Length: 393
Ligand SMILES: [Zn+2]
Ligand SMILES: [Zn+2]
Image (cartoon, rainbow, N blue to C red; front, side, top):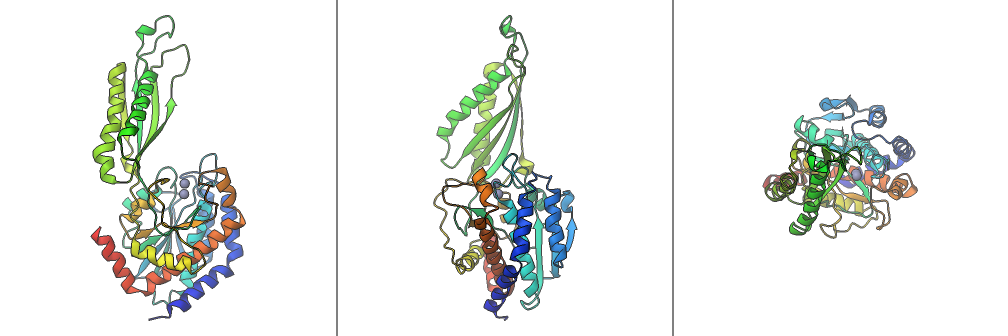
């Protein structure tokens, strides 16, 4: 068996040696914020970087122009680092995905350099677009990108260090009401007010929140509330996201209860309801592989970082890495780049994602990922534990 600690020393040294070019790549992506499925320049930057380091890069895989697969080596084990690089509308890289994409590439390049001495195998980077909006990974899973892997791992910048991630299942609901327009003062009684239907539904949802589990989240915006103030709106539309910590609770409880709010509003106002659940891009709960997470925890703590257990089910978002974690052993740890009071998706966090603290998170995250990659390559018992845990779930 190869000397594991020697291999880990080599991967961290390789990342340190490339520090300047990694920081430069992260900053370039940060300065080029591109939203879901429009990450053409950001994807190209990562693809070029990996190609320059000797990876075989396939661009536009899975029928997604900004998805990619970079491969080095052959055969088993097959380990994948997961890159994200989309930005948020308005906030830019307020989620720090410039760090995620760069860290995944850095870890893969470092592991590539020791692959032969680690006993061989395949190291991949999967470039996954549109995490913030449309769930690029969901489509990539259904198109086979995650087939045949021993594990998939990524890091996400945050305001604390964790090895275990929880994420809520998340399902989009698009609704519209169709009523009848009328003069709002001269003949309001001739109208069927679609905006009233929407307001009624919002009130019902607000009341429903008291009757659902604490961790459930139901939130929406009105995307059409009428066009003219003196016309009874004949059409109203909204988008909602429905989230919960259990996929079954989503299907058996939340979906019917939420839908009933809209059906009741349609009944009350005489408007017609149309709706569409976004099942094809539904985010699933995160099922952290604890065996792999434990290996990551030891590695990141060896760098002087102390991980904390996620304090509660509060302050959870959703991620399409959840879907990945349900088809292959996966982890989604957080690497701290921010004080505890600064959350992701803010302007303050965006600034941190290009700061010295952000660079340190990038380098430490890449080192911890690479060391965990070494563990997965050289330790068949770890792979067995990962697999048994995954199969038993
Ligand atoms: Zn985000
Ligand atoms: Zn994110």
